[in-house]
Image 1 (tube, rainbow, N blue to C red):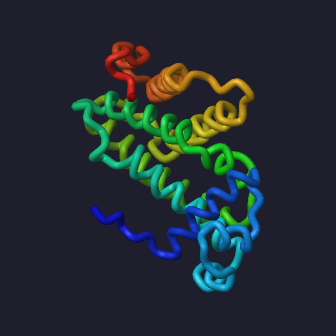
Image 2 (image 1 turned 90 degrees about the vertical axis):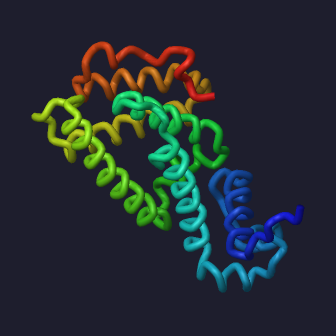
Length: 207
């Protein structure tokens, strides 16, 4: 079977991601071009600048994160709370398994060239999250007096800070334990019934 040919922009994005990981957040266009086996002029042609290429790498990371953790087709539980547990587990696992994740939540999150990408991703999270909380309220799972927009902002901020602490720690906590702790935090903030707050059983864990 013939392998799918990768286009030049994607080759450059992959090479840039590898260079960023290798350089701990630093990148030179000449090194990226050499790794991608194209001319440096072609790299500038496709992305305009080093900042444009870095932004494209981060955007690709977030696109894959959304597919892995936020796509409804990935969630198999029949109830609202169960699906949210799965979503959190997938979110944590994606970051734990992706070698670029510590840079995205760490050094690159403060880079001017990725601020627009970060803001666009966060806006999508807030919009989708508020919609999801309203669905939980319609199902009678979440109390009606909670403000979906304010609540999701608080939850996203708390989860992100917990993830940053985990990924940048010299002793990264076990992913399942982190997922369970985050779920207890989320369930408490949403005032879910006690039967839905318990950490996941072994059979529920995402491999």
